[in-house]
Amino acid sequence: MHIEFVNPGFQYVLDSIMVFQKDDSSTFWNDSLFYFFEELDKEYAYSLSGEERKKYFEEKLSEVYKANETLLEEKVQAYSKHWNLHNAEITQAFSDAFGIDCSERFNDLVCNISLNPVSPRYLKEHSFDVFYLNSEKGALGNALHELVHFVWFAVWNDLFKDSYEEYENPSLKWILSELVVEAVMSDERLSSVNPYYPREHGGCIYPYFFTMEIDGVPITDTVREMYSTMRISEFMQESYAYCRKHEAEIREHIFKSENK
Image 1 (cartoon, helix red, strand yellow):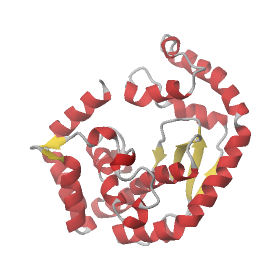
Image 2 (cartoon, one colour):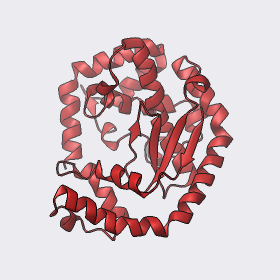
Image 3 (cartoon, one colour):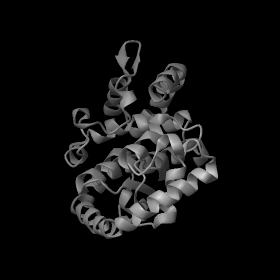
């Protein structure tokens, strides 16, 4: 695997932020921006129309970006150096987990270092974001989470021959891909370099998965047991069948958690 860490420029940063600042965005997704940037007034921002809101964010955050350009370039170097220290072992761990040679299929990954506290990933483009205030270890932990998605859906697509358009929020396939991250991270080669693992250190999946139970059993326990006892192709099929069976309960829990 190879990751090129880059400063993508302010226009990219602004566009990335706006994806999560729509009128119908839940506080689960949009609140973090206002937490990290006291320059922004959330109540005022949401009194504005979409384009006016974007102009408001542009005005306020362009100054933040300019003030941090040197830091962003320093992060490019620091994140790259830390990733390269662990690249070989991480690549082998993913190759073993998914039964493919990840050094061949994932040597063109791009990580955009961004002011966006939410870190989107783009499967087809092999790119993702990390927040610029992360430490080197934190950025690596975030990268590992996103790498699970890239490798998971590459193998999934080989198996099911479906469409990449089906892999985005709010599809059940997206939900499953978020849920399985902790199980994959249980490999000691990955958990040892991931500061968010185990969950007592913050967790490497969305927190609402930790409180989700099906028939009185934590869903994370069920998924991890499947993962530890099945080949990856069987695990994908069985875990998805399990999620389809309990889709209504899963979605209800997520909805309540994201809209508290």
